[in-house]
Figure 1: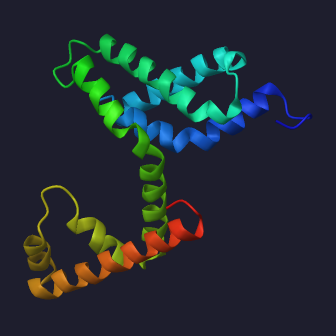
Figure 2: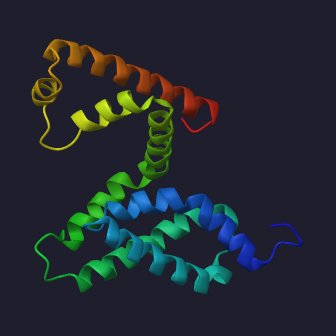
Length: 176
């Protein structure tokens, strides 16, 4: 923390750095993205109230994820009547199993979104359309009056192009 940086500014800087990873982590613990926003907001409030208790800013990410885990469990208990909510035990196991992957998952997702934006509109529409739930390449080819095999080859090339772009983006930004 610089001498001119207030506690609030330090907190906000650290929170913004962890925001993507926090959302990915919380999404694995709650049923929907709306729930994620609720839990992340509550986590931020609790973290701000307890920020003075944090002994080292280097540990902020792990400390924030711990608060998020407890807030997600509390939130899930408030939804206990919903049939779509995991048991506390299963949610804890998922959090333990995936906790270390969240930052890299968020980085990959951001890189993929960036690479998708680099595609021209027609190619982006194609790749997004065939990856929608319930859509098959056969259906898409028929709708477009194009040979199925041509669509498969185009999709294969686009997937490879996106993979290369994501890997290059992660390597360039040091996030791999």
